[in-house]
Length: 445
Image 1 (cartoon, rainbow, N blue to C red):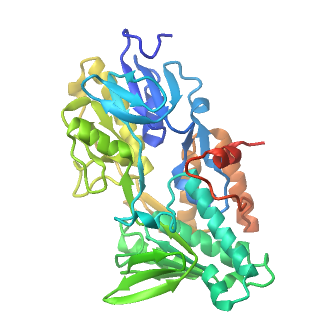
Image 2 (image 1 turned 30 degrees about the vertical axis):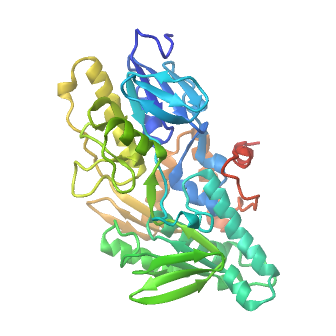
Image 3 (image 1 turned 45 degrees about the vertical axis):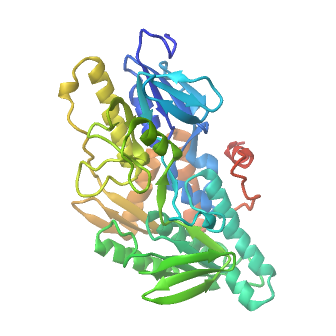
């Protein structure tokens, strides 16, 4: 095999092992290129099921696949666990934190997004978001520790504060978290405590606009809200959070100020681009949107550099419709498929056969709880049990490895009949600077 830096074969450097990066690498396995995939983690994370780790249904290893294991049969790739801290477009090099700079012929950046607190970054410690395994373990610890604290509390008001859960943002993540916490309180834990009745827990879902799941059709949003309320969730729309402290959340509503006493706040209201977005903007002159995402050309390249591509959540693709494409896995996978055809076409000097990238929307789906989901396939909409079954099939299908598919199916089957959540361990809150907790939970016996 030629080495990845061999001058005889073009070198594709991919930064990020999420859906966009990993699928680009896999799709280029038969192309006449050498590939280096760089990620600060050694695993691919199936983010759509991350909330199930956060709420005790699944363990981290169930939705994570080691990159080297996924790519072990691919002969034209090497994987580096490192962090890209800079790029030099003129010299065509990426600068790494703990490795010599790496030259590239083609650079693909797909490092995703993180939480956005809209200028209130000090809220991050009080209201964790959900993008990484560490986030999920932090949220899991806070949810189940809150019930434990309520069990020990003799003061009724402080006890209720521990039993009040506030989720900010009613997009898919917020809806999924709210529904799962309601099922925990009203079903999974209802007979597990002696001093408290977990069914008295209050789950409040706060949204700034007039309905939950704003990107969905109004009738699906309305059905999702009814399903949430049936589970015991209180939906508060047209409200803006103006302050968060360890004891309460302050909400603005039509000129009035409301105070919610709570010990547990979870964030699902916004995202912003990873730090590489700004680096790309500074080094290439590419335009950034308000969230820091890179505005890309119709072929997913940036500014005047036709060998640098940005994919996935980090990309703002505004060449199809009035709004940028959503930051969801299907968009990332289709972008990866497009780019894995574009690069070989350019190498073969057949670029003229390529048309601009166009996303095909096969539908949107969100789960609210067991037997409760909404699905929009464009030509048809589904709710309830049928939608939930479609959601289950889609998520199992797109899990990367067979053992993940099998384990998740078995765990879901067991949870379905027992209403249990076997992964509700309370661990030390993960330190963002350490991977020890994650490594411990990613190791299967």
